[in-house]
Length: 93
Image (cartoon, rainbow, N blue to C red; front, side, top):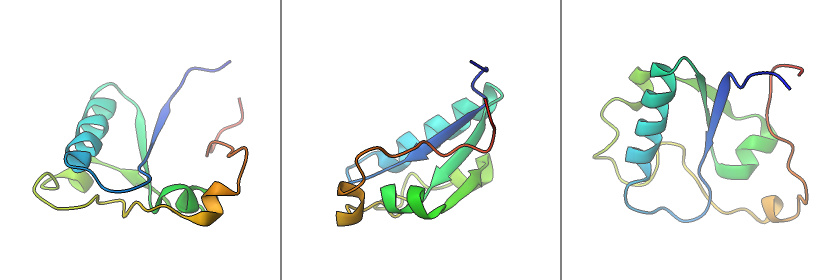
């Protein structure tokens, strides 16, 4: 198995306090440790539909004071029907 080079951040379900702070912390820590960071928008629907964007420190700058999550997470009935969600990857291992 190859070395992990990319981390995907997906938020799903109802918003909770601190979600943007967690997204920011994972993004900044991952970049500091030489990982590529991908933000997956709109929960599992976004994963299935490919709504994935590279995250940089600029993407997460100033998000701590914003309400909700910058990824617009939500619960979707379609994500509940997918029994085995395949992780998003751009590389073959």
